[in-house]
Length: 464
Image 1 (cartoon, rainbow, N blue to C red):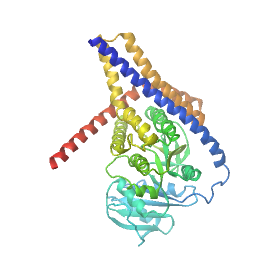
Image 2: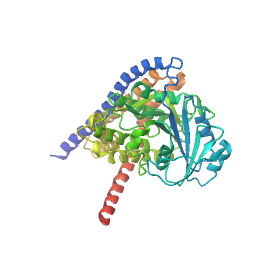
Image 3: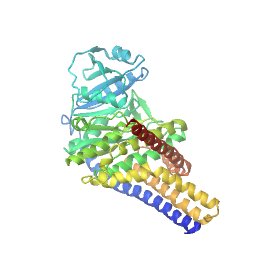
Image 4: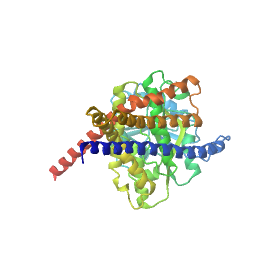
């Protein structure tokens, strides 16, 4: 095969990959339209006054904290204001070295309480448990530092209710967030987890730790992330959830879990950077192995808001951490891939995320570099080069625009015409540099992860 023939064949393969990738995501958007139609019908019933009053399952809210004296009181006060029939708040002080614990004790009138602590998940040592005399549903666990996953496992051990939800300190909620999150559990008794997308809080008005008014960020970088979240963290998982194949939950979102099932699968793993993401993959794997009927759903309603990075350095570190967590989540649960009882999660979703999310950034980066080098070396015509980038970038714009259109049709969070014009322009501009920059960061993270795996394998072989 001549060099020109090889370049032509490689160009067609790369172009085919881009087309299949974008069309696959577009089909997920189409599936999400079907799901959104069903959700709109359910919302009509949910909006009736007190339709579920007294029927909701009680929820344990787990808030892991470390060295957060300045923000912990605001975070706890926000949770205390949530509108839900029965819930408890368990704050896990994970070995703070500042005045976090003292601040909690003085603000909420905490006192050490010798209650039974059933160890169902192994964790670092718990010093003591405090109860608030001012708020009966507030408790604080003081323990040795073990990381967020270890702290959440300690919170699960101390929790009293059948459902639990882990809350990040930076998460901003609506007063109705818990009611929206628990709705799938009320509609279907086979639901074992529900995950929610995260929305961009930059620019929004927050009062007493709760969302008050939605608005666009003033800086451009967070606006680019709004479109990115619509593509990857909202309509993609919503599409998968229609087939009970939502394998990867949004890394920055929140999840509501059946405590009994989580304990049965071993709780949170301490050797991963995205706890909820890996937990959901493992729940799929073990429930499929047991051949038990279950559902893991996705809540598209805007219930969870978080501030996003406003500078490139912070954004880069976050995206690299998420890519590392994705690779950990899949590699630690490879038994699900093409397993006999894998169903949609193992036979469709797992290969999809492996090809388009794990290897996708490297393949896309290779595609861009290969086409540019082939053109620079005279092996590819200008027309062929332009055709490739027109298709690759054009399909990306189409995907971003479809996500924005679905957002506008479903939630209409940004009613101003000027806001929609800004978002529409970002849906185009985001594919002309911002997405490529993310691909570089994620490719680098994937390469580092592969090298770390190689080093760990060598160390294990040397030890043996």
